[in-house]
Image (cartoon, rainbow, N blue to C red; front, side, top):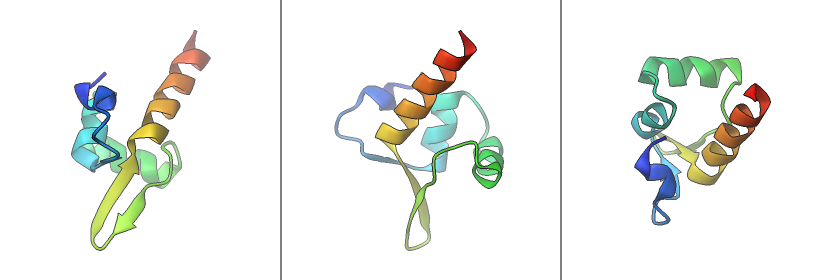
Length: 67
């Protein structure tokens, strides 16, 4: 997991940061967004951002299901 998930000062993450958290490419993050795999991001002007808290919850659920 990326160190950004443990940074309490980070609330919103861009596609590059989300990709790093999952260990995938940015293209995979965009595909997962289209397929509904990831939590819904927010749009700020032209920027797409994901909630750090929602990404952490999603990763935790994903690992629990795989066990």
